[in-house]
Every structure is written in structure tokens, then in C-alpha cells.
Length: 222
Length: 344
Image (cartoon, rainbow over all chains, first blue to last red):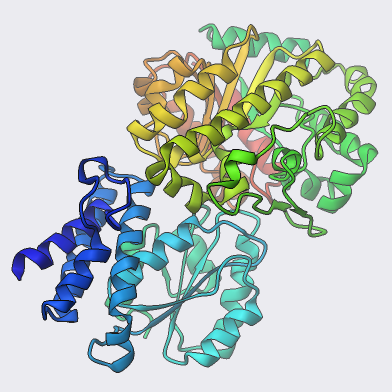
């Protein structure tokens, strides 16, 4: 049982999604997180144990990313492997057998179509046990407000890649804070710095997906 | 760029030391239309406004080289438009291109555009043709053939997440896409050079190379950049303001002899990574210092940057990246003054 769970964690760390996935090359033809999760659940392993192994796998790949031992493509593959697990675990979340840590609403701000940072954060945050509401790219303030209204206890993450769209980010932070002052808002993206985030009135700034997880896990802003 | 500026740039690339050091900025939209006081859509759509804005900038900041200088473009829509990407042009915001590749299979049928006729590219060239007399009348010339790099274009055509994932899941198709884009880019650069014989430089912008590791860089970037920079021009300029520690050691092999980076790595470290073979254009923080700080702070930070250089050869003092929106005239003057005051 322990071996099966450990293997799932390894698939997350290595980005092995399923048997047909050609990545990574040295695991060609082997079962991935998709098959292994199904098998694990069928054999009676709990969803909590699987989720724990996934979180550990994500942490390992995240740490490697932080040390520049792997790069964005590897992290994206790990997130894909994680998503494959989550598709099997979804029913357990829905029935309350496994509890999420909370809801995280995320989107790239208006005028910005870049999704890579947003997707990375969404995938890693989800892999760490949060329910993610992904609003996509080019998201206007009103759409964020609607999402917060529908998910009153959520945290919000705003992403931007372009310097120009930081202005829209600032407007969105203000919009959320004026209507939902207790909702924590974290911002990130290439043009952002802690100073800029502070000036916007955001509760947090994360330069990496792991930073976003740390912010959420410590209940920052609440 | 004037003859004198071009000569100084080439001699700097050849290792000659100037005192004070040369100053140069990548100057483009949205900084330029904002600074000139026009809407971005007017800057893009009105050739006379575009020329006036550029002429005013070179006149006001005559001590700085503007790289590439008289940059005719439509933001990130420029090259993707030739592939059929829908462009969105908000009146006073940066334009952006929409995806055209919905699934990896679409790559197989993606046509290679003709830069002479496709998308916005004829407008890019025609603007320069119309402006040429005015540019040369001001003592400047069109010096660079300019394009976004192949990975950057791929990320617009397909989506960055999708393209970076494709590198791992279907490397042959990812390479096929880069190859098609490279074929197109070679045609596009050649057309610019044929149209304007004064061109003696190639300028490529690609920040997606900053997100990949060594193995992917060797597979999906290095051979294609080598092809693109394989030309007899004097200046081979690359901009990547995303992380650059992976790609920097490859710059000489890529053919790059002029490099504008972000500000997360020092010029001294980059000199080591490139073995002093590449001229560096950088790198005070563009937003937190050049755009947001006071002129006095810009002056001090710029002096600190120059003073920290262990080797002043092959350096063009600039910011780490392009000129960000909101940089005031006083800050640019303070920057130039600081470099002038930083004599060896």
C-alpha cells in the first residue's frame, strides 16, 4: 500500500500523467498518476493518503523549481499529473470525505492574455489541497467581484505579465477591497514586486507558485 | 540611429572602451505614445504621429541611442497577425494576439506566411517606407531588421502553457512549429534587409527562452536562433528580460553580440556567463527605479550600476528590459547625466 502511494507521489514529481504519455522518456510505457490513482482507490487506499502523497510530490518538484533544477515545462507536467489525480479524487471532495483547505479564485487581469503564471499557480495551489476557481485570462473586475460574491470565504489571486496591465490589476485590487475588505488578495507576475503589490493594497505578493501556497496556508490576510 | 551612434555601437561591440560609456534604450510602445501624449491606437494607426513621436524622442534624448530606433510594429500582434491571429487593439492599452493553434494537430497544417503580403507586416514596412525620408532627414537611418523570436511567437500562436507542455509531450511537433516560424522569420528579416539597405543589424525579442532548461534550450532554441542570426550584419541583438542564466552561456554560440536582459542578474555575472564576448545593454530596474524613482534616485542608482562594473568594456548602460511605461523626461536626463558623471 505504501509503495503504491509513493509511486503516485513520484509520478507527480516526475510529471508522469498516464501510460500513453511520452514524458518523461525514462518512464515510457509505465502507468502514470492517472492509472495508479484509480488502482490505489480500487485497492482501498484512502483519498487522504493519495492526496498527501501528491502534496509531497508537488513539494519536491516545487523545491527543485526554486533551486533552478527544473523549469516551467517540468512544473507544468507535474501539474498535469496532479490534475489527473484530482479528477479521480473529485467525488471524495464533493461528498466531504476529503476536505479542501478553502477556495482560491484566480485569474489574469483585464487586457492580459498570458496564462502561464496563472496556470502554474492554479495547478500548484490545487495540488496543495485548495479548491481552485479559475476565471481564465483577460478577466475584468466585475467578473472577480461576481466570483467573490459566489464564494464568500475565498482568497483571490491576480496575475499579470504585462507592465501595462498592472494598472488594471491595481483597479481590480481596489475593486475587490472596496466591496469585500476582508477577502485576502494576492498578486503575482513578472512585472510585480512587493513594493508594487503594497502600493496596490494587495495583502500579499508571491513571485512563485510556492509563495502563493505559503500565503494561503498561513491564512495570510485573514 | 545616427552614423556616429551606429559607429560607437559597433566599436563598443568590438571591445573599444568609451568614456563616458554609451547609453541606449529599447524604446517602443507603450512608453513612447504615453510620453508623446497620444493614444496607443493613434500611435499605431497614424504614420505621421508615429514619426513625429519618434523624431521628438531622438531630438530630446540625443545623447542616448534608441534601439532599434524607429521601431515600426504593432506590439505583440505584429508577427502573429501574419499567421492569422486575431489582434485586439484597445484604444489606449497594449494590443494582444489571440491563439490560432487549438490542438497540436493544427501545427501540421499551419501555413508559412508570406511577409510581403500577410497580416500587419506590409503595414510595418510601408510605414518605414513612408517615414524613411523624414528619418534620414533627421540624420538617422533604419538600422535593424526586427522580429519577435520563434518561441515567443509560438507562445502567442498556441498559448504559452500549451506550447511549453507540448515541448515535453510531443517534442517533434513542438520542433516542427518552431521550424515553420523560423522559416517565416528568415523570410521576414530578409525582406526588411532588402527593403532598407541601411539595415546592418538584426534584433530579436524572445522572453520565452527564459522559462526553459538547458536540454529544451538546446533542442528548441539554440539551433533556430543560430539560423536566424546567421547573417553578415554587424549587430546581432537579443532581448530577453525573463530569467537568462540558462541561455546566457549560449549567447556567443547563438551568434548574439548585443544582449538586453532583465535586472535579476548583475552585469558582472553576465560578463562571466558570456565570457566577456557579448556586449550587455543594461540593467537598472526599469519600473522600480527608472519609472518610479525620483530623478535624484535614478542618478544615484545609475552611478552605482556603473561603479559596480568590474570591466567597463562591452557595456551599453540601459535599463533591464525595454523602456517601461511612465518614465519621465527628467528621469531619462538624470540617467544620462549619471553615466556622463561616471567617468573611468
